[in-house]
Image 1 (spheres, rainbow, N blue to C red):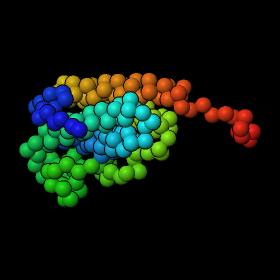
Image 2 (image 1 turned 180 degrees about the horizontal axis):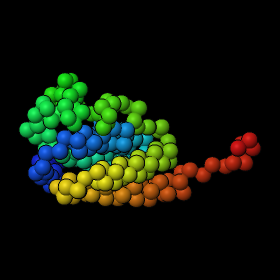
Image 3 (image 1 turned 180 degrees about the vertical axis):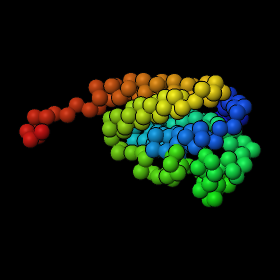
Image 4 (image 1 turned 90 degrees about the vertical axis):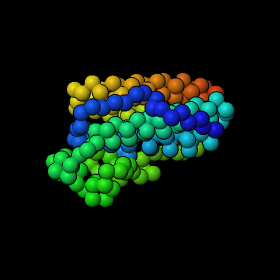
Length: 195
């Protein structure tokens, strides 16, 4: 189903080590609004979409989110390249180093590990798409917060690219949401007078 191209969706070449930014950016790897949760959410939800259009959209965006996970991983690795133990301690990363060395592990910027509770799958296409739109807006906001924490153009460019993709994903989900509300979700409130 997937064709893997051995290049990042957007080029990343960070020249300046910045362990504090790495600690913040890792939240988009394993945090509540990060790329891992988004990819799992969409790839899982695709199975209960009512038509091939919905399944295709969730598959496409879920797959793209995996490529964003790869970009975030690359940024974190480049930001921490050749870090010393002293620098890790100064950045507050000694607990991470103790458990994982220099490898990545899905956590947020506070070191809280990823959990499947970060994403919702209800089996209701309208509810799931509403969740997806909210997820994209939260990810966009997180990228904007990250962008406000740096002046490094090597970081700002890929963060801006990722922010823009969240906006595009939101728009695609909104189009499908509106279509599904019109097509499939027409509750008859007269059937249940207590509503």
